[in-house]
Image (tube, rainbow, N blue to C red; front, side, top):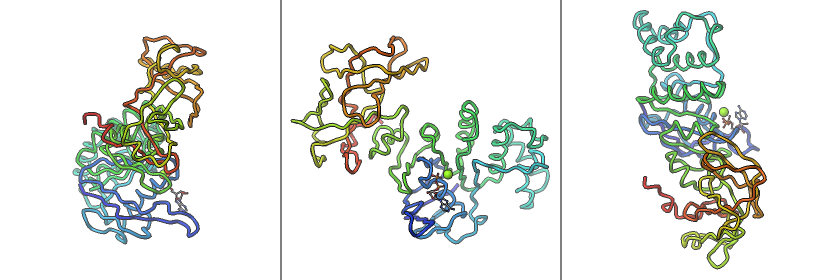
Length: 368
Ligand SMILES: Nc1ncnc2c1ncn2[C@@H]1O[C@H](COP(=O)(O)OP(=O)(O)O)[C@@H](O)[C@H]1O
Ligand SMILES: [Mg+2]
């Protein structure tokens, strides 16, 4: 186990381009599972590769256990890296693929075999140890690649989208395996998938255009997004965002009125605000219901236990529709005209120019 610190770490690939990673400050504690998440090109892989020593650091520092490792050779850092596109030795069995690095480092054959067997058991590939990679499925190969990193017992794991080549079901089971085996290693895990980020990490760091947007527990990121980017990137379906105007302490969305909290009134720099509401923060009622916004159902996404109902409404939506989570017991059809009642206490407020949350974040504390 080891701690990792990004200290204003910057990597720029060309003088005329903004940095791929821009002055990143981030601490990963001993034994912590930290997820780096963000859209393609936001600098996740570059950040990871700086820790592993595969990418140079232009300014700032990377510290492992408090020691600046910039300039230190990759193999001296005791960091194991698992990539999305892993390469196994095709002529070696699974057992030999997994034990190769240990044998190279001088470990005896019996000791290597023992360690490989342990890890194979954990990853549910013990029955495959004698096979060659060509005889494995994609998911099995990925677990071998992971096993090969795990047997080395590194101080730090860096995993770069290791599950993105797997089908949905395998992704879920492998996710659980990774979380289970991580317990005593520090982990830096990269994904563009916000669900993976929310379910796997102790903490999540959200990046956009090389800039850290927010770092926190999955719950903090979900319930207290620091800006519009984080609010709309994290959470599925996406948070509904509406341009609003404060008038006498209230924002009106059709017949629905949202009282603006004092903290938001104090922080707002103009009357224009962006109002955010997640799918679980609306209730469907009749159109005539007092304080309901009139919506028309365009699409119903049936998920079994719940359904997501997509409605168009005559308000300045920044995404195309209002999404409402509805209990499976309720029948709603495309074309229905419904009343949409927002929950005032679950409303988010943002500055339309800077994107910053205008809220007193403590208001969204969920008894945590
Ligand atoms: N070797 C490279 N040469 C030039 N530009 C690069 C190189 N690697 C990455 N980049 C650029 O740096 C940015 C961040 O890339 P990357 O870290 O791979 O993003 P992510 O992993 O989040 O998708 C992108 O704009 C990408 O095009
Ligand atoms: Mg990448």
